[in-house]
Length: 370
Image (cartoon, rainbow, N blue to C red; front, side, top):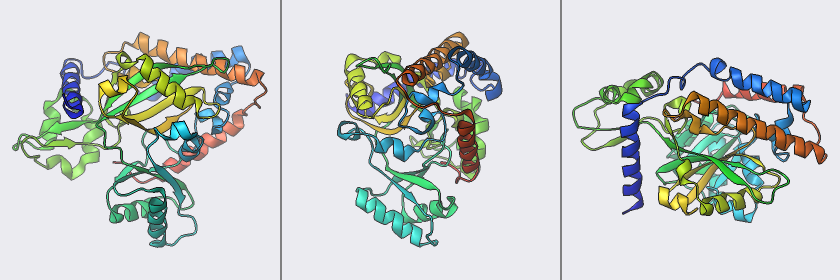
């Protein structure tokens, strides 16, 4: 059976399950409501360990440990030769000091030097939740993106990975351990409809239980495209960014964890200096290939601010969701405590707050995402 066939069969099975239970009752609670117990847990851990920002020490080579304000390019630049084999090619650029038009020439020259060709994925160097991420297929697309992007702000151009599967793999290694472990695998499915040659995209969304439940996220973004009638059998992807808050379906993929996959991710993580806690976002050829630790490309590495996203599987209970959150953030504090004991300098609360404010201000200026 081909990789594409296997991936399609798995996605069809996921669709059948989500039709039965399209959303969990807490999946789209306001963030202030869902994360209130997590915030209280964080405060309790801070009192216990005498530091509100201790998780910022978990990955000391990353700004704020990856809680916020970290550079996507700088994290990937840390990777050694072994880890780089598994990272999708990328280049970091800034348009500072360049006139409109000159920025395109500079960007394409940087792409050529890095061996990149269209299509590429353009993304801000500092952001979260897919803000500002866009698929760029032509010079004209890139020119528009650069014109909308805030000047003097770094961005990343990365090769588009053709694999259909997308996953987030959470990795933890205590500083006193020689080997790490995978604690979460999330399979991500971007919202997609299959045309029948008669129905509008809007109608196809309404006919699907999961898509209808997130239509408030999809329809405003689609705009006039919602009235398009896809051809018979045409698979129309509704958003490019595989992000939960953009309407993607997340499924618990922990059944894919094998020793081979664990060994591969551990080797990659240990080739990133002092990386102990975070999530690898990647695209993969097939579930079986992922189990073997083969045929995948990492598109992003996230640090201490990331979460084990399998909690957003509609079938995950709220008890399991909070148990997972408390385990991971509790571990971040314990790793931070171990790094503090080793002499890693503290990370000030005001410094962290300032970085968060800067990231928030920048995200308000980014181009709309796909």
